[in-house]
Each structure stands twice: as C-alpha cells, then as structure tokens.
Length: 164
Image (cartoon, rainbow, N blue to C red; front, side, top):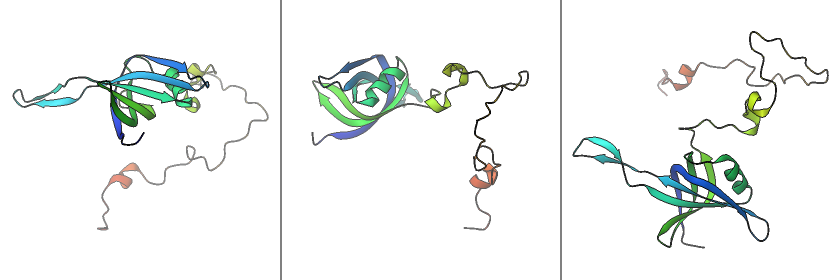
C-alpha cells in the first residue's frame, strides 16, 4: 500500500509472540510492543511516564521465525516498519526487529557462550588445556583480536593538537 509512514518504535514486548503460517507456508508472527513516552512534569520539576502506546507488530518470512524464537514478554525491542492506523489501533508492518542492547545482552550463533551452546567451557586458570585435534587450522596472522591496537583509545577520541 502507498501512503504509509515509516516509523521506529522502542518499547517492551507485551504478551507472547504468535507464530502462524500462511496458506503458502510462509511464517508470520504477530506481537505487541508497548511504548511508554517520557514526559516532563513542569509543576513537579521531574520526568514521569506518559500514557502507554500499544503497537501491534507483524513480521513475515525468516524474521518471523527468529522473532518467535528470541522474543518473550517484557523484552525491550526496537522495531522499524510501515506504521498504519487500522480499527483504531496502531499497526507496524515490521521490516526489522532487534533487541534493545540498552537493556539486554544479546548473543548471536557465533558469540553464544560455550556453556549455553553445549560446548566445553573455555579453560580457566585452574583447568588444563583441552587436546587440540591434529587437523585444526592455525589462526590467521591478520586476526585483529590477536594483534595489538594501533593507537590507544584516548588518541582516537582526544581533539587533535595540530589544529585540524
């Protein structure tokens, strides 16, 4: 549809994510995000929570499966998509949904801690190193985690002394 407004909403998931499949087998998920605006109360001289605004979000395809697997009640999210008013309710046909890292720590498949991924935990100071398979490839010399930083952080963030 044309004439829709693209919006970004930030709030908490309210309730459970509903996952269904269309007649063609495409996954579709629906969930509600409640956004609570902050308002400044001049009479009291302090900030307070405003009236909660519920937004019904819909996602399809692989994103729907990911949303259904990752999001639960009260998780803080940021969602973007086309905002529309239907039947006196705000609906967001989401293009992107993510966990708000201001409030949560999120892991992706590659960064999942070993204990949660079902692997042996990394060795600590009191554990022996696990046996490495003979065919394990060596880490590349250009791996940036293994190289020392070029400049300290202060040198990057400090104003230039040359006047440029």
